[in-house]
Image 1 (tube, rainbow, N blue to C red):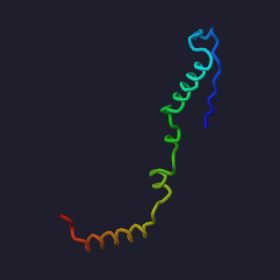
Image 2: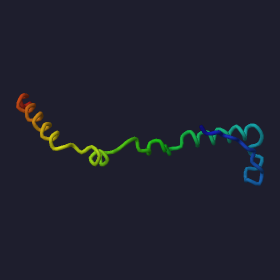
Image 3: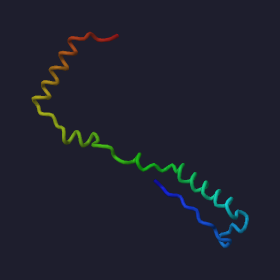
Image 4: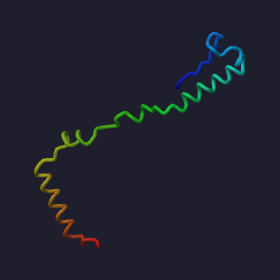
Amino acid sequence: MATITSEPLSSAAGRGNRESGALGEFRSFWRQFFVRAFDPYRPELHYMRGPGPAWRAKHEAVSPAVQTRVAEIRAAKAQRSPARS
């Protein structure tokens, strides 16, 4: 969780006395809050959440015996169920 701190700005920073005291700190706090709260960068959306299809293709190779059995099951299902129109 981010911590937001507010520090008074010096007049040399270009603000002068326009925003002074509690009002200036209040506005500074909310400005920083909105900048950080609505930041469009969301790193958790870019993290990989597990192996992808290339990894599965490489590591989950099916033996020829299993492949023939799967083909037989699919053929039996195709014969059993009529084609939908």
